[in-house]
Image 1 (tube, rainbow, N blue to C red):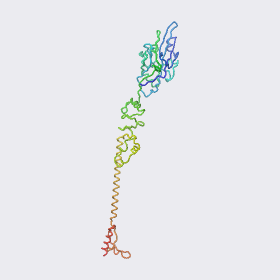
Image 2: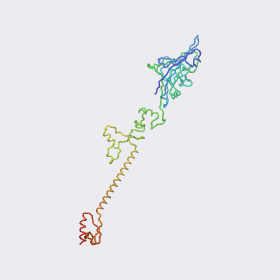
Image 3: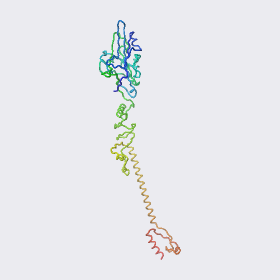
Image 4: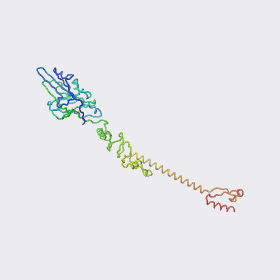
Length: 385
């Protein structure tokens, strides 16, 4: 339950000897008392006396103001009650009425005698049907306030006036000598205290449930995390603007990190390379190793990209190996290929003086290797005989 202690309280009294109407309808009071700390103070009363010198009438009205600006918006107010400490000096069965007050400024101004009539009795803040009784005891007591009083929270200030019910609120002149009064204990240092409002304040906002969390419970979630939202599944505090979650059990909208890179790297050549996080943990063995999981789609994309890279790499290696074999075959063919040369008509390789051939040229295939030297010599001997 939320509470608001009165910031201003006091009484305005009028003493008349002309008539009831003059006393009841006066615009200015006779005296005023602000923020009393008395432990037994007549807060509301009516006093009527008759005698040989005529009649007198005295009315006292009790004004209380509360600063409710902290709950002016963003909350739904309910179960509003006005708490006070009465005393046993109160008249038995003393009936009161509670109406709207227009005095005390923004709940920060003292009363003046001009505030005697600063209320609107057409705006009721309680039942005002004679059932609200000022308690004749020393126990903490309260009055139930209605929806009209709750609506005053939107103005940032709740200001009320308590009147005697039978004569002052109903405007009935007393027909006999009367002294009815309601006394209160305003000594905050003793057993009594200053009047205060008690109510239930429910945070408003988005009216529907969010990820299974009701709008009424979201405020408590925020208070537990010091203003930071929590993951509705794992109860961990969200990072940044509430878009990042450190929960390793499920993905949320965006992740800053996944499992350690060496855990999600496929086996192969690249797996042997130590990752940066592994090197950091080697330097700082006490560092935290907990990481949030990447979502399933991101893992699939990484795996597909790695598989495509391995396929391209294997194709490239096969291509390079094929090119190497082709180059080796070409080199072998070049070393094994014979050469066409011009020979004399009788096939002799010797040349006559001056280097001329011994006849018409003849074609022959000769091997260029060292073994071909013996073949050329045998060929020359056979042909030139």
